Image: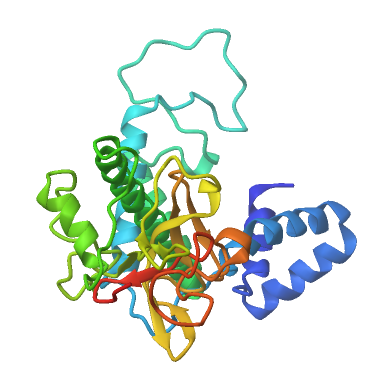
Length: 319
């Protein structure tokens, strides 16, 4: 199958073809099992992009389409300067036994009627063709761009959590394996401030986006610890068992009564566990024994009622 047919199948999958091309493509699909298989592969490749649509009311960065086209066009021009072109001849010419040495620029593998066009025109034509293609795809594919941006932001957030984990482990190494603990009548933010005051963390504040509201903990939430049988407030250690399910830090939730909703990412939150792993969780029941990580077993915001009942609090929340 040639690339033009594949391009039409991509446009068909994205519902971006004109009516006439759509009809032609449907005839091709009816007559060609290979075309149908190719379309199935295209749809399979596109499916993950639509699984986590970003907020449609959130505006895209200004000039996103124009900047994207410009960057791709720039890359194409640079690539043409760096990659030696393939020497070829027009279909009407026979291949000579030897290619004569010439100061003329080599000929690109294009149709015979295009051979007289100079290399700078080739570059401009290729850039223009890519730009037109991108305008077509981006014009109907902005939701996919929003999804890609969402995934990029999610990945950057996870990287930030891993950096904080390094600071937490350095602190724990100097404190008998104990992670910073939020003390009685202190806020969750105090633990992160401890890391900063003692030189383990150099960030001015933690923030997954631009809505950190100036708090040191930003728009993340930190463990409030738990109470033992005597009611004593306890923190966590990297020596504890079940570290795969002990949450230390996560995107802060938006609270409404006993309900919690993601605030930084659509459809879930990044969670940093005591073993250093960061997972994107689509619900909050990811603690030990499927414990809810943003409220305790009484449905309240505060310290857990036992070690398995860990709770993450926003910067201003207390045990």
